[in-house]
Image (cartoon, rainbow, N blue to C red; front, side, top):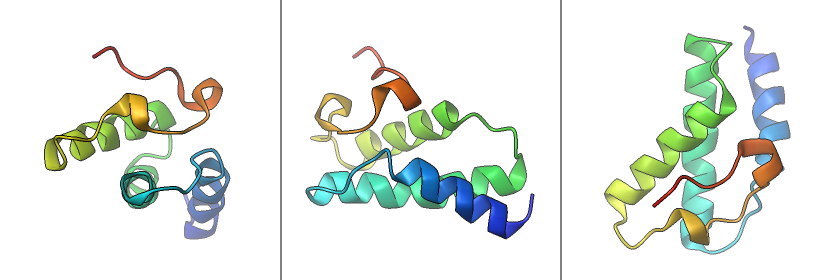
Length: 83
């Protein structure tokens, strides 16, 4: 997949994760970088896989971060994982 396509896909997906407080914005940054990396390695990587990977990383580095506090399009990315 070409970089132009990757950036276009990421841009469309990022519109479904609004900016907000510091943790929300850190998640957005993490998702954007990870999604580009995932698409470069395997263009068929499901967005849900990238999303869950980023949630796990946020919870690992920021123990006070909870997926339930994250604002995003649940119809697009799926429901939050069970606690």
